[in-house]
Image 1: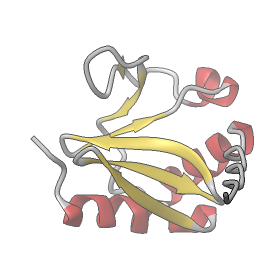
Image 2: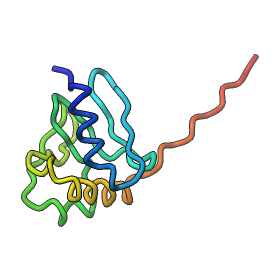
Image 3: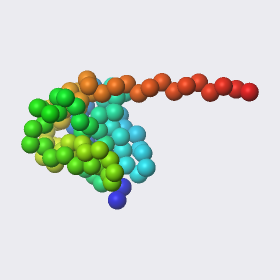
Image 4: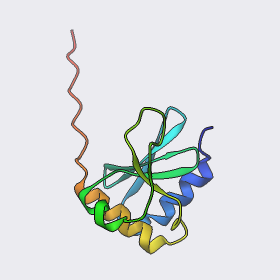
Length: 110
């Protein structure tokens, strides 16, 4: 089941305190970015935060689950979606540890 655009917009609005939040549709689901860094996935209307060193202590008690079959486990945010301040803190802390995407190579013309 694909995620609803309204759920994705709600989650991104809740994270807005972390900075520039954006999302990209991928295979019927969504990747969430903070400052250009991928920090989360939204699959089946569920928010999954990417693992990080901060998350090991900042998200104690938050269950981990794969967002889709054969994926690595991520932190599944079940509670706290209504707490914009907390979700913004999670987004900002996660973004600090995620790498920027690699620049795309320029295509050569013939």
